[in-house]
Image 1 (cartoon, helix red, strand yellow):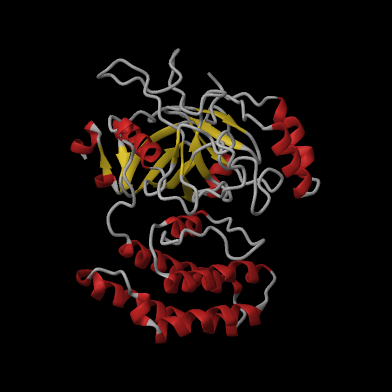
Image 2: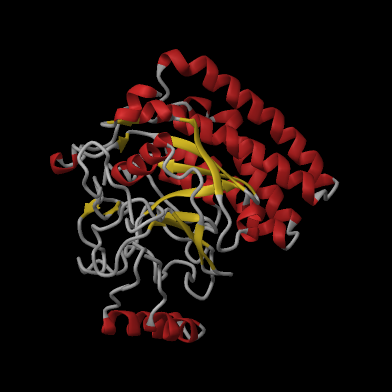
Length: 383
């Protein structure tokens, strides 16, 4: 079965060109059902924005902010460095310099606060990361002085990667208990990196079990089984979606060879500020239209579950990459969040995703990092 675009999208796109308020009012009054087949106070700081009106549109940044940690100091370093991206577009060198100075002051003078939450046995590694970031700060200052836009971008990325490593060390245990009714399903208690090798090139995605353990666990389990090897991309539209996961034959999802039954996974979305995900009901159906998910559709290459029509719990193996479209996803609110379950982001291979067309093939899918975080799955023992 293939995803079919039906009538609501035909009027969403024109309306999206009008004011956000008008779009919101129409959305709320009509109660969009999203009926397409296959789209399917002490809390950790999981912010997916820089400031009001500046939604983050980078998958790596969203993943960093989605980590369940409680250390505002490291978030301040991250926010300053993330802001450089926006300033760099307009070559606002004084603003870029201020951002770097903010990060440098914290890295140099607030190390104790920066390392709060790091286990003692990992402190030496964390301190080494901070030292490397301080070295990188000196390099990025030189690039700013030379107004070398390309090098500023590259060095900024390196520092942020180190920030991400530091933040990952702060994660202690799993943040919530998955409901017992889903104990029969694979779960990802952490993160995993998956490489999809296609006939057009490689796509690398990071899937986030901290925010969507059942959804991410199902995907990683299927990757480990080799389910996606050889499958075609069944839909590819410019500025919309690239979809795959439909097996050959009559089945539209994964049939467990042990039970002979279709494996359906529940709708699962973690809302910022909630202790655990919403299960079994879309945010729209729950009346939570404007509640922001920890994993939003802000980024090009958001990866989400495809599902049948009005059944939020009917998803299985099919998934799609969403191509960020400012008409469908204006900053701070969009028509996708809360209706379909995001479980990760493309972190490498944007140019490959742009090339993929219907009929292209996933030659192989491999878990290259994080396979040990998979539980409740026969493939977990094999890895």
